[in-house]
Figure (cartoon, rainbow, N blue to C red):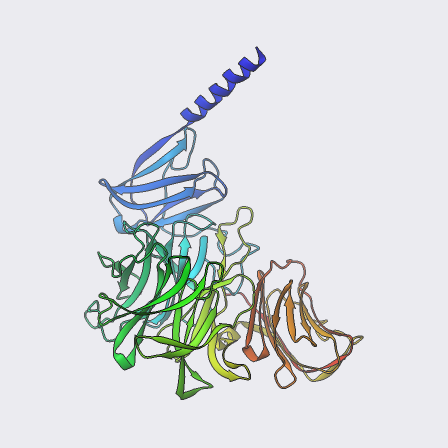
Length: 557
C-alpha cells in the first residue's frame, strides 16, 4: 500500500510539473530602446523568440529568471520603436514573472556595472554577458574598434553575436550595442575586419569608405559572410554568403590587402578529413568573389598547430624595411615565419611559440593602425563567473609585436603599448643595489591593487629570484633560466647576462614579459582583495638589481 501511495504521488508530481511548464507568449509595444531580460545564473535554459507580424527578428536561449533575477540582459529594439512585437518562450512555469510585465528601458545600465569584486580594472570586459575571441580589430574613423565573440544573455558560451567596443587610446573602451546578430545562416563565429580604403568592394558611398567585417555563419550553414559599416555604428550584411561551406569545421576568416598583387587575401581555418588542421588561402579583387589559392597543413587532432583563428601579417626583421617576413599564427599563438607571394605562404621556421602562459587564446591584431604598429589583443580566460556575476572573461592588454633575429632564429617579441603609461598614478624608481638572501625587501613599502613593475636584474650566484605580487609568486630559476608562475613554467633566457621583467598586475591575474619580450606569460589568477603587498627577494646567493620601477595604476572604468 505504501509503494502504491508513493507511485500515485510521483505520478501526480510528474503531471503537476508538466502542467506547470507551458509555452508562453505576450505582445508589447516598443516604447523604449531596450527590452530587459531577467537572468538567473544556473536556471534552466529557455528558448526565446521575438516576432514582428510573424517575422522572427531575434532568437536566443537564456537562463530565464522565474522570479527575482541575478541581473538583466538588455536587448536593443530601438529600430522597431512604436511597433508591436511578440515574445514567445518555449516553456515557462505558470507562476513565472519573467515577462509579466514586459520591462523596457532607454538606457543599457545597471548600478552594479563595472563594480564587481572580480572585475579586471584595466582589461576590457563586457558590461554583462560572456566574451571570448577578439574579432575584426581595426582602426576606423578615429577610433579603435574591438569586436568580440559575445553572449549577451548569459555568463557562459552560447548565442554567438559580435559584440562591439570602441576606444580613442587603446586603453579606455566604450561598449556599444552588438554589431552582428545571429541570422538564418547561423550564429556569428569569429573573423576579421579591414578598411576598404579604395572601395574595391563598391560598398562605400558619398565619400565614406567601408569598414568590412568577415565572419563565419556557424552551427548551421558553415559559410563565410560579409558585413560592413560606413559610420562605425550601423552594420549591414550582404544578403548572401561569400564563401561556401568546405567542411563542417571551416571558420574564422582573416582578410588582408596584398599590395604587390593588388588583391585581397583571405586565410580560413579548415578541418580536413582525419581531423587535420589546415589554413586555406583565397584571393579576391572585390571582397565578394573568392578563389582558392593554396593551403598550409598544420597538426592533426590534439596537435593543434594551425588550429582555428588564423592571423596573418608582415613584419620587418629588426626594423629593416628591406627585410620583411610574413607570420601565420593559429589560436594557441603557435606560429610560422616565412614568405608570401600573394598566393602561397612558404614557411621558413615553424611551430614557434611566443606566449607561454595559461588560457590566452585566439589573439588578433589591429588592421589600419595609424602609427603603423602591429598591435595584438587576445582573449584571456579569467575566472569571473562566480555567484551572481553578470559577466565573464576578458581581453588581454594591447601589445606591440615586432620580429627580431635572435640566437635561435627569427622570433616574435611583445611589449605593452605605450598608451598604458597613462594609467600610472604614483611611480617609484629604485636605483642599483645588490641583493642577498638576507637583504631587506626593496618593495616593502609598496602597496597597490593594480600595478606595473619593471625590474632589470643580473644574477650573480643566486639560485632563484622571486617577485611576489599580492601573494602570487613569480620565480626565476637561474640555472635553468626558467620562469615559474603558479605551476606554469617557461624557458626565459638571460639576455647579456640579465633578466628584464615587466609585470602587469590586475585583480584577475598577471601578464609577465621576460627576456626583452621574447617570453610572454599571462597567468589568470584571482588575487585576494585584502592582499596588496609586494616583495623582491633572492635565494641561495646574490644578484644585482640594476633598476626597478613600481607604478601604481588606476582603473579604466
